[in-house]
Image 1 (cartoon, rainbow, N blue to C red):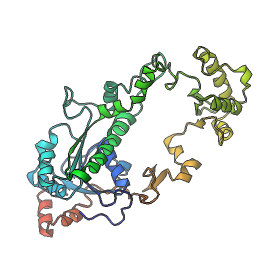
Image 2: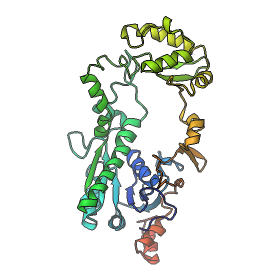
Image 3: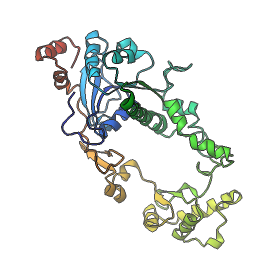
Image 4: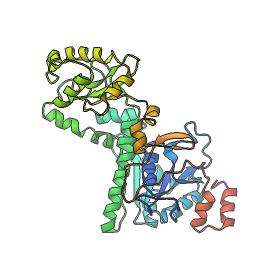
Length: 385
């Protein structure tokens, strides 16, 4: 598959085949596409209406799409023809599904031994729970990542679906794929990357094990330094009903915070003395509550007070710092995070918006060597769209 001419970035020249799925696999492929890889997404033909379909979904940006009936042998052959020319093959099915469809690792490696075969599941390819259903909240419940999140005396709070689907899922898979590609430079061989959202979200808790071993994480949920238990590392409501985030851990930063809040240090208890935390929380709550969010943001800007406004994602896209950094872009009228990280020599291009499902089928199949008549026949048979 020739690389799309508009592609730019450190992964320019890399080709990826993505079997359509939800959340983690698309996110991994969005990362690869953002960084310059030529990603072809295989969407299902005859799957009916997808209730979760979003035509302008940012997770589908920056790649071409072909519509294929994977349940037919002819459709599987189309996918294997794609696999013959790819560097990376990605799927997010339950264990065994890709094999039953004839596009599992053995099938792909028989055509292309150098392909990196990336697969992402909730529980992993093996283990007692491997074949059961689950969602982000279940995976982080089992990995230990959900337990610490929440207020003292209350239940765990689901952190949207950031930890398993994205941080411990798609990002974890993308990292594994890139590591396998690096190894291939010396071995010349591809391999299977088995990324599990339980494994990935567990990895995100690594720091907590160090804190616990050092005696710095001893309380229950909401009683520790980084989980809202410490009044100098928490969120506070402002006079206008907004919120600010405070993270003034070090003494010099806490001193700067007191200055921003017009508090006399001699009247404020030591912030590192946990016995004084209830009184300190009352003081900070009252001080923050005298000001609006905008007032406090303006007071703290340019200081080391570690106080920032809590912005919604949509507000974040408009913040001057994010605007200066180009942290967000707008595609097809939809603001969304820009590709990242940044590169000084090979910066990624602004990605294209999502293509309609199957919009590039004829173009991609022609690149694979299919004649126009063969493409028409496959479409007539319902194998492609």
